[in-house]
Length: 589
Image (tube, rainbow, N blue to C red; front, side):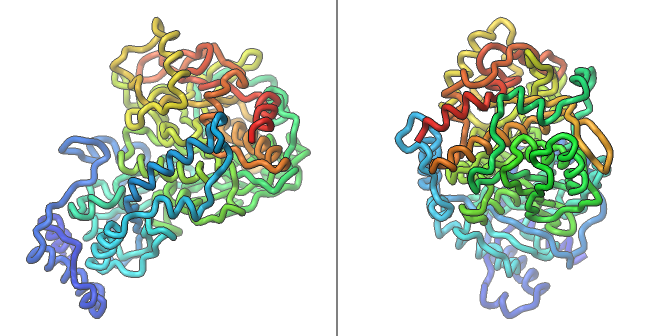
């Protein structure tokens, strides 16, 4: 077909440059033809594959990028509109200043502690160089991709474009992929080929979507040899007692949020039923919905997140942020990036200051450029005073699900492996708590160990020397995770009008997020700032957490790491003691 011929020409000798004024006067089809003709005849620019890892010969299909539940379906029709996003490289000087500002305003020993930046200041700091923006604009215009919108500083360019235009830009064929294993059966638009961008474009972008990155579809863990339920199961009142929580919130106008993705919705009637039985303090309170929600199609995942965030911090205002990443709302979108982009559009006054996120990919399935850019977006959130907490996953040292690594190196999870997010692992049992076997944890193969955790991790490696797995199975110099932990087994929940129980670090993340929200509430009520990025505070005050010294996180055919005194890769610093933490944070500026 003509569509395939243009695509093949694009794959041969590529260029995104074409006469902007001429294309503006032509129809879409003629514009694409001229762009390709110009590519063939005028511009001899090498195509550069966009790979997730260094080295030649990478194939998304061969390396499992299309693995998991995603199955390829029909090719997308040429005239169909797909969501196209370009992450333009940001100012290198600005990125260094952003990191410096974040670490200063989150270090409790720094004179700048708590002096968060405004959204406008952050956006100005990391704005892309003008030449990078101009290059990307010319490339898009040359292929007829008109009508795209730029973020306030130009670091993201996105909008709807025809599928054939997207294919020419990326040099791939786009198909629908469905995850039939998930309850919501989400459908997304992706490619199983390696996108190839012109060299002059590849040099100025971090990533482009749609691509061959397949988002994680989070499911509550199914645990083999699970611990028995504690009496009738874990409840909000049990958690509040266990973690010494005496406050309800509501003293200030600060708020908390749940980030939900790919068909995970909640039911208001389930929430009310849960509140009546387990959290009378929160009864009748409802979250503000940002994005979509389908009350008649609730999932266990979203129900668990919301019910426990709202019941552990019952008087803190709560928002439910839903990002589809699938048809029909944003068909080609990457949901986690869309969520972070939405954060960057939300004013400081109204954005929730704490987010609980249950979203985990295996790190080795994520392009390095994508991972690093997401990490920058997390820095931007932290610099504004937002606390971002994420579940580590439920595969022990085997990543999100422990399926592909027997005898091989352990698999980190992302975004938990980013140094700029607070990763939450899991425990079970009480008095004492024990590291839960599924709690994902270990060391990143992408991000180096940050300075704020160097002492704690070095101490672990020294004390665990006799019990550590073989050195070839983990990167001891990488970012270590989790940072903290909480209960993650036998959670009582309500879904579709019925009683159910949830397991996994997805249960732990909203519990710790609620604790941070309550601490924020107390600080803001006294005229202080929100806590923002909490990792430096956590590692500077390990003694304020309930140390977990038993348990391990097996995977990849091994027993994994062991929970020991101090920080460890199963439970991090341990579980929160609200009373001790409150005393500390109220003493800080």
